[in-house]
Length: 160
Image 1 (tube, helix red, strand yellow):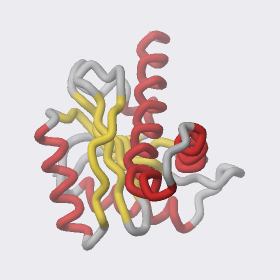
Image 2 (tube, helix red, strand yellow; image 1 turned 90 degrees about the vertical axis):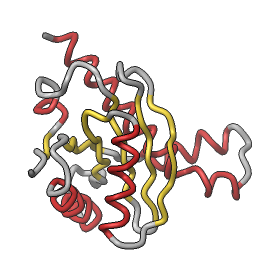
Image 3 (cartoon, one colour; image 1 turned 180 degrees about the vertical axis):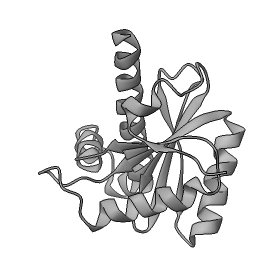
């Protein structure tokens, strides 16, 4: 049992017609988690995991995915502005490889450039307190990542 690690274009024809997707914003200290509805229209925040060790973190993610009837995962890939991949992207790819050994559900890598910055700006614009922003920024970044992937999947489906 090793899940495929794919781009969104590679994953689109392989995904079941229905079933939620779980979005992951992988940080050094936390993992933001979001989920879509089964029709993959809207991403919503789920929770933020304080990172401990890979196995308990992965177990929690898999538990959340199972509870939501997930059909796959969307993992944010922190690509540099010039399109190159640095240490954070390499860390995300390593997480994906290790996580793929624990599930058969496809793992989609999604370019997450500026996701956290965009979410921070949006929360500041709504006058959210600094403390509240710190509590939800990772979940909201996961929503941003997942919603981008959902929108792209709908666009790909429209191209067929």
